[in-house]
Length: 185
Length: 283
Image (cartoon, rainbow over all chains, first blue to last red):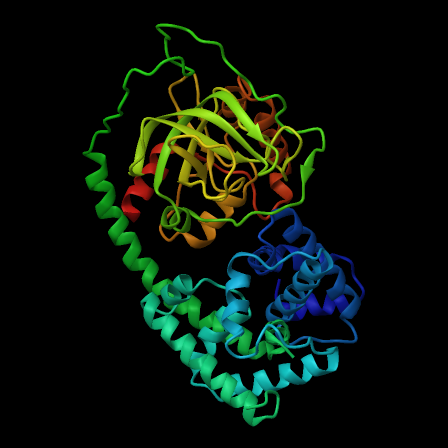
């Protein structure tokens, strides 16, 4: 089913929308959730929560890119699930977090929701200004928590090269956030 | 504002950017898939001509062998534990990352239960190495499993006498009992296969909690093993073969098989030889 038809089902409050979304994007959302949770049952529950969240949000929201829209909901819910359970992020997500400590230290105070959203806008602006390949690699790493090896494979690079690109991009991000006033120099 | 906030803020990026990163990755993957198919076809030709030599040194009293001087079999006091499963999680691996983090990949047979250490929550078993796939490891080892008779990791029972496993072994570095040649499985409860040897001579690998097979499908390039879980005769034979000596593991496998239709990480059954070939190809 095409995305436009799916959205139409949501707007008509037709419950088939949930099943159809699950069929089209369930496995994809599971992959996004699993990358953070590394647990099959938790990830499956997270997909169900995503479907329920989408049902409640559409309408009024009318996503143009349903796949990415669902991925964002899933990622947010998976992170919330980790926080709620008081669990440490594990595996690749923890490695990504450690890498991001080069940009913003882990010891600093946690930001409020508004500040995080503001930071999100800044990160968005930063990514838009990057060359396409660097932007894509950063998103694969920091949004999807994909292993560097896999990213390298996806973009036809060797692992070291991908790691170097990521390292340089993080340095640029830090400089950008300093310039935008998010970090003191 | 800290690194966690920054990690969360990546969830706010434009959907168009998220989608673009996927499109670019999938374009590149398609190009590489064509190259991979050609390489796999060549590799298969070579493999078809090769014969496997399985080292079968005479060991004492392991399942499937005729003991010259039988000794008492010791089973674990409890496979699941009075306190049941815990929600503690362990790092999950694919074949490539499990191999990279291990000293050896091999097929082992669990022997008698040796001891448990509640302080480090570890249980120790005798084990015989039937086949070394990669790396090097002595023929007789002690396998240290995380979990004890009081509690076990979510979804996984303790091993028991007669279990045949395809495992990736690493050194034990968290203290506990001191045994010579003591190893632990990489990925604790996730990243190993139970091996079922069926009466018709088939040798099948099944990951009881389906996490390992899911990550293999996601991350191990070229690991396109034929899934036999849909063949009811094979599924039943595998469950029966494992259930003969390990009812707890067989029950989990049977339950996950029933739920497979509604799961994004369904139960898979692979031929052991296909996995061995793949691991050898990673070296």
